[in-house]
Image (cartoon, rainbow, N blue to C red; front, top):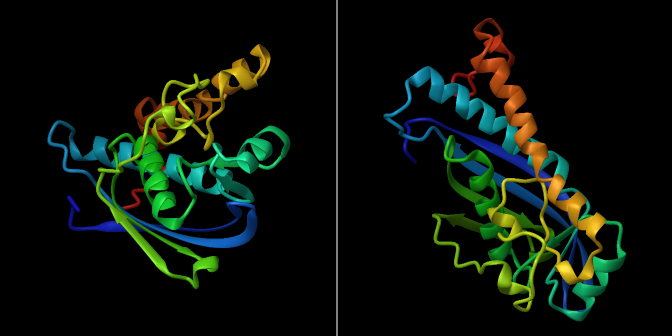
Length: 219
């Protein structure tokens, strides 16, 4: 941790986890420890504002994306079937979706979303289908593949979802989608960017409205 204070984001969410041909309802509890980065190129008030924006963006993703997802390895037969047929939000994983890989994926995704404006020190993931065992993860050596985890076929996005500044948590093969669907997927990447621009305008253009985002480090 690079600061003498930090906050903890907490999130409980439900999901269906698919191991081989077994589909299990799971309740996850997520604990994310994060603090201010030590960046001497930014004056303290600017750093506080940017960290407040990053905090809002991370919460936006946590609240709107994780609930009721189906977590599956898309290279398996059932994974391919679910990705093509279900209306649920799908989280694709490069390998079996155990807590070890989920912790790394979520840490990587959140680190991408906050853009270094918050230092994510550690996350703790607890799942009901593993007798509530705690999985801890810190660091950035994720040992995760590139988009080639999908059988080396061309994917819609050049980067896997855990390295994209976006809402999405899945990767699709270009050959599986029509041009209209691919265009929609690419356009959806702008949601976080639009929200970030809105918050930045409120904090950095109109200084009198800076109270819209509280200083989360002094609560």
